[in-house]
Amino acid sequence: MTYTQFYNQWHAMGCFSVHQVHAIFPDFNRANWHQWQKSGYIVMLRRGWYAFADYLQQPDYARYFAGKICAPSYISLHTALSFYGIIPEAVVEITSVTTQKTCRYENAFGQFSYQTIRPHLFWGFEPKMMRDGKQYMMATPEKAIIDLLYLYPQYSTLEELRELRFDEDWMREELNLTRLKDYAERINSPVLNKRIKLLLKAYEL
Image (cartoon, rainbow, N blue to C red; front, side, top):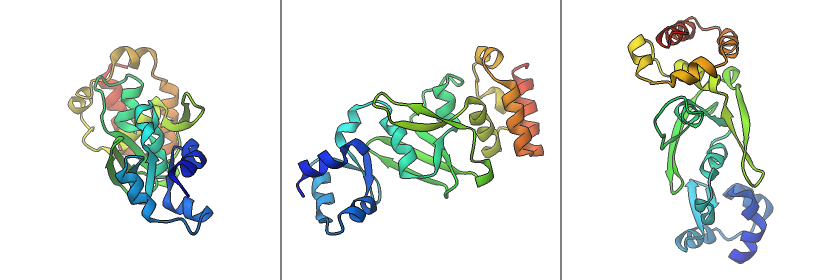
């Protein structure tokens, strides 16, 4: 199979795993991966996973790939908070939560980190559509806040919570307090509930 033939058949997927290719083409020449990567046609996302290099020029594909190279997962934490304009910083690393083990990858598309969350907490996300019809999963704003407070124990004082610099207008006008409290009730963690109360106090809500 030539690269052009492979490109025409697999390009629409954006990325692919070695196992996916060999499941359809058991005799596929493994040497192609090294050669095509050396030629700049494909980019390694992680061991056994590749993407077509021309996607480097297209927006949102790093977020799309985040959900592929570690599944199941959804974007949350600092990346989601930045996406919604809740925190002022532009986040370079794409942060996600997963039911798999905590891990981190770095490739030409960026840096990707994954924090482990228990399966019964794996909810509170929704699809974000891309221009070409693909989609990736991202936490709702309230679940991103919940995930942050649940997974990062350092956010347990008024001082630390204020240093997050949540956008005060967003907190007053757009935060869905009912949803936030419903999420917290569903998790039913005394420690999390205490941190949420401190967060609301820190932003005078």
